[in-house]
Image 1 (cartoon, one colour):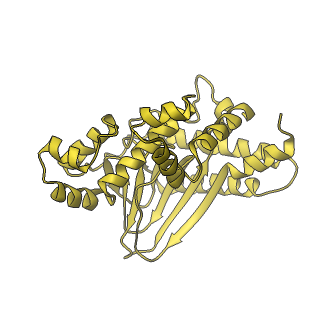
Image 2 (tube, helix red, strand yellow):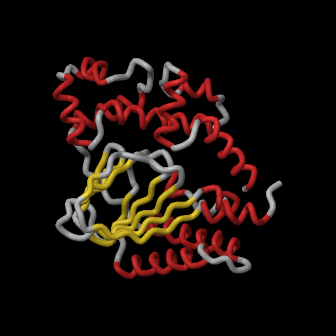
Length: 286
């Protein structure tokens, strides 16, 4: 059983609020996080890609991502890029949800890459920013009761975010090139050791060099790297479900155990065994 000081340290590491400002152009690669993310766009010339769709961002766009959704933002640099990002461990509020109020509903109850983005009014933006600043203030405090106030402030943010998603019709994503969309769907459903640029090109009767160029142009990633990201995301889910590291290796589409360990650690920063141990420890804690 962990003492309160250990719990407080883990709690502090489980919530992060970042007010970000970028002037130079940037083109992020597809990635996913170990936690859930709330992303409020406040300005800039940015395209946001989420799985098989993208949105040209407008001031007030709010996006949510769970820990398996691949996403990337392209900032073209003509206007300063300003956004607010909140990252949190979903287990912090797991026990606070009720049958009528699922604090994680907007993160979990949608198809990957769909229904992630809605548009807020200035008044709604202001309210969300105030709630996030309050969360930032209490999560960084070392005062008595800060741990409780951090969780309750996070819950307040999540109640408001979920209410916004329930109230508004989701922004319709722009779908990329139909060929690439079909290929992304194919990758999702055919994670195996045989999956490769060559096998995909053969399946879709496309020249592999043209496919490589088109895929990189549309997604910002090579086919090879995207497949590795998807396999790693699948492996995280399998480990969370209790599969052994060996079982996870083959079920997520790797055929070489050492390569699986090496790839997982390179992408996530920790080994599969460490990830599963950390996941189970946090589950016991909450």
